[in-house]
Image (cartoon, rainbow, N blue to C red; front, side, top):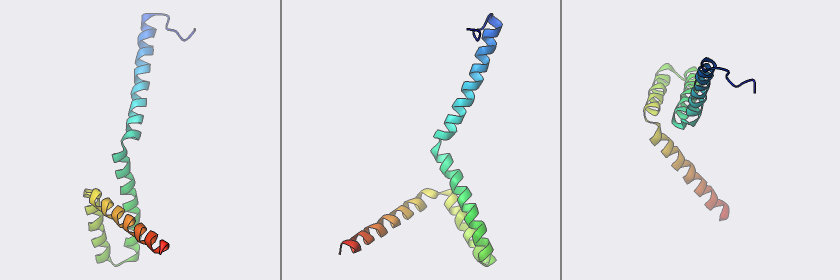
Length: 101
């Protein structure tokens, strides 16, 4: 057991190092568990990529309108996602109904 502290000062140092390591680990776990922030970060990245591609393909007024739309999505993404989910479910139900007919 050579890792065991030999005196009080080594024990304090060991304790402080362990606390720092635990704090770093908890911070990393907290970031991984914060799904909302991760989704927002991913959404921002995707919106920026799409916005850049669209800006290259359309006129400046149309690109400006798209950028305004992306800001609306960033400000309140839940209704947009709910609408997209409803659309996907509706399309899937229609396709399923057609395939059984």
